[in-house]
Length: 110
Image 1 (tube, rainbow, N blue to C red):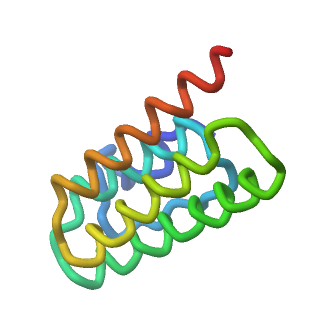
Image 2 (cartoon, rainbow, N blue to C red):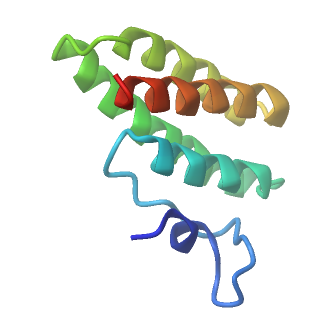
């Protein structure tokens, strides 16, 4: 599935009520979550974003347990993102998620 399909409604406009089905810890999924955080100003929408970050965190935790290189950093970035999504601090949450996306992109190229 195209990541853009996961975040937009029928009109192609980002839909903050749409929940991302997080099944992989990869740059495309993290980018989809980033787009959702960017368009989610309301507390109930941010609860959806927290659940998406939680799902990513679970995948990162599994990667740590499997000894995947870089996974501990991913876990820490997701912890920061989760805390800042929860308190409505979009800039800090987005910064952590963008760092995660970039780290995952770098890990894929090695």
